Amino acid sequence: MPLFNFTAINSAGETQRGTLEVDDEAAVVASLHRQGSILMRVEPAAGNSFIDGLLAMEFGRGRALGRQEVANFTRELAIMLAAGQDLDRTLRFLVETAPNTRVAGVIGKLRNTVRDGAPLATALGQHPRSFPKLYVGLVRAGEAGGTLAPTLEHLASLIERQRALAATVTSAMIYPSLLLVAAIGSIVLLLTQVLPQFVPLFAQNGAALPASTQALISAGDFVGAYGLWILLAAILSGLAIRQLLLRPGPRLLADRVVLRIPVIGSLVREVLAARFARTLGTLLINGVPLLSALGIVRGSIGNLAAVAAVSSASVAAQGGAGLSAALAKADVFPLRTINLMRLGEETAQLGPMALRAADIHEEKSRLGVQRLVSLLVPVITVVMGAAVAGIVSSLLLAMLSLNDLAN
Image: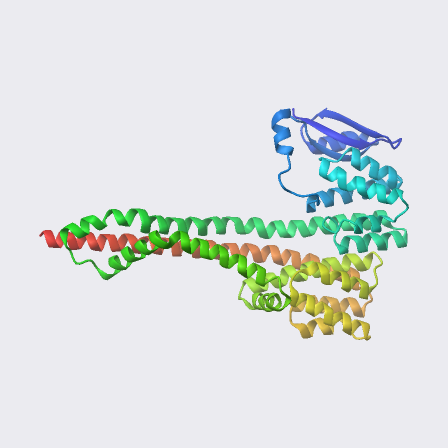
């Protein structure tokens, strides 16, 4: 059976580390639960220290924590605080059990700031690359309300859900992207390597080539002569567009255009609605006032068209108007989001209804990604097949011309 290393807190509040030989991680959890211990971390035991050391090396990741590292830190912090541990001892434990020196360094700085008398939210605010405004705002609300542990639990769930949604979209687009690259590579290979092999044969026989064959030969010559320059120009254009989109005006225009693209625009709207509703609902149920919550949400959405819609809604809410009416006028979020927000306002349950809306939109986003992939894959396949068939057909026509000339 495999070996698993674990870190836990026993019933006396002491750190417990060890190795168990069990079937899977669930067996580790069950075993420690029977002993009255709280599991903090479990991972397969190292089989080769040299290889594990290479895998654990960090290459250019900077000092900021990744999203999964922040989620793990938040979850472990919430578990220990809920178990009755004080903040200083909890942070010390997390430093000692950090998976690498980078995580240990960030948590160590947090502990030093807290030990100097600063609140945890203030310490987190000193590391904006690791902990965004949303994170700091929720922790500040939790500290003010005396509910830091439950707030951190909600925050860990929020981070994990956002990461899962982003991972769903990213992983689903990998196969179509690879298929597109393979299609372009195959066509370029045929034009630059296969087709030129027949050109001397055609030239020696002096046959009049079909127009399609002549066009393909010219295209192959052009790609062979200027292909690298075209690739370089495409890369430079991409970098220039990226720099241009850093400016608010062009970025706002591009974000609005994306929302109007068929199929893709609907998917982007669902993703934005899920992110907006999840963030707003989490903030509200943790005691953050509506206007402050909307201010934090603006910094976490990403799409400037959605940011403008939330800003208009914030102004309307500040003036006493309803949040849902202002969001409806912006025409950015799906109608389902507006209706659920309106229902939440009418029943004084805006936070829970926002979380309910987030669940619905996250599921819609997953289904939308699946539909988009199911549409892209056959389209790319058909286009690639048609292009290859066209090239082969042109070659066969030219070969038939040579056969007619010989006869």
